[in-house]
Image (cartoon, rainbow, N blue to C red; front, side, top):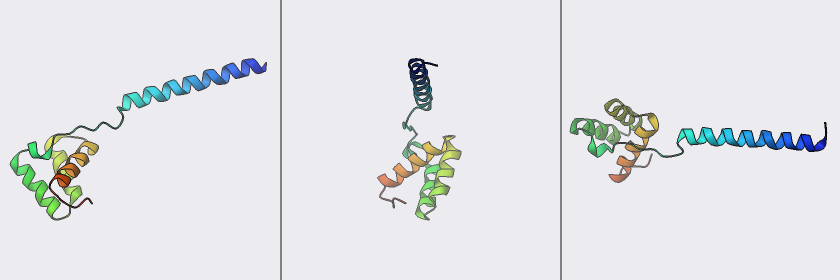
Length: 92
């Protein structure tokens, strides 16, 4: 096989891999995470989340948020951490 043909095949494979990777990344949507703020939830749900955060149970607060909204883990974590940050709670 000639060196020129090998070079063309390598370039074609690289272009194909690049195209697939780009398509997969576009499908995943990047780092955009949207969520319903905790402040917009029903008062009883906010009270449960507040109580969990006051006890240092961030995981429980995230679980309550997920149960109330049906959001995914990333959205729930972002919502609870943002709420905690806005209200002066500890970062972790």
